Image 1 (cartoon, rainbow, N blue to C red):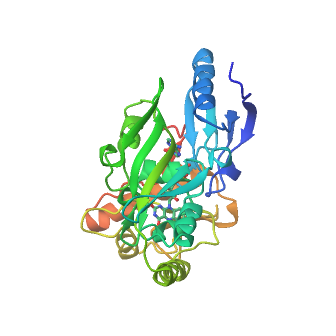
Image 2 (cartoon, rainbow, N blue to C red):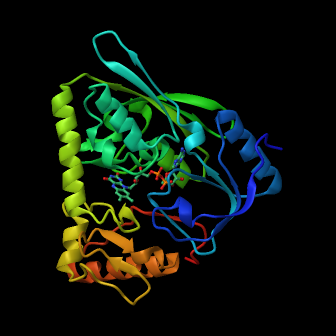
Image 3 (cartoon, rainbow, N blue to C red):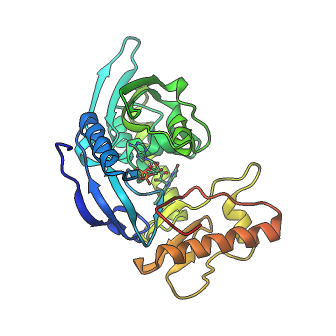
Length: 305
Ligand SMILES: Cc1cc2nc3c(=O)[nH]c(=O)nc-3n(C[C@H](O)[C@H](O)[C@H](O)COP(=O)(O)OP(=O)(O)OC[C@H]3O[C@@H](n4cnc5c(N)ncnc54)[C@H](O)[C@@H]3O)c2cc1C
């Protein structure tokens, strides 16, 4: 039995920025790798599936919830520290549960450059590594020098250049797709010092650009679709006449502010409403442009597909 006792029947909508979805049959927020390991053992003994959740800012959780154990890597694993290195760079160590924006702000406070883009991304540090989150020309892979993760047997350490980072993917995402276990516990990042004024100026500038172009006051999971090679998803959706489009009054809508975001107005749409709209957009864009959009948002639980 895990030292940490999973809770039963925990609603997940509040743990997803889409603000929809059903409950987790079991739910736990571990504090370290040992607790992660014992939770996996516990689930294994009971024959339960496990889903690792970060801040839920890239997930659409099924209305039926998750019929297994959700392990949420969040505030209990949010350590943050830094150490000067030879040559003037600084090594920042972050727990996987730390908000990625907090990591970005901390780097800015230390006058470290390269993580300014992170300040506007509402995920966890673990989720950022898993997805290789990026914005405005920066990517998580640019500064991650080492990741520690639990592989189902051991706590492992791997250098950043071995992490298989690509556009919204990583070794961890690929292992996950193969049904293998890889729970990110934290990372180390190496960043050079820069001009404090330029760094805070860039952070402010990116915040202004984001606020002007994205529907940040409405529940969503950010960009719903990956950027297709040679195109922009939002532009293709707009060209298909779908900016601001809704199938019905469920609350699910293609954002009138940014066509790349599907939003959940008033948090009243069900996950099935959101997915129905996603599928509709994919088909309509394909008919209009010949490009098949791929979801960036990850589906959690059973959608009957
Ligand atoms: C308003 C808004 C703006 C956004 N802007 C951007 C942007 O500019 N750029 C961008 O890249 N993304 C953006 N996103 C999407 C999202 O914030 C990122 O994908 C983020 O990295 C997801 O992190 P998370 O902790 O929320 O992950 P979750 O949504 O919780 O999970 C995403 C995936 O990562 C896995 N995962 C999470 N944590 C771990 C862990 N510790 N170990 C193993 N697997 C894990 C989960 O199993 C899941 O498969 C935005 C989202 C919103 C709502």
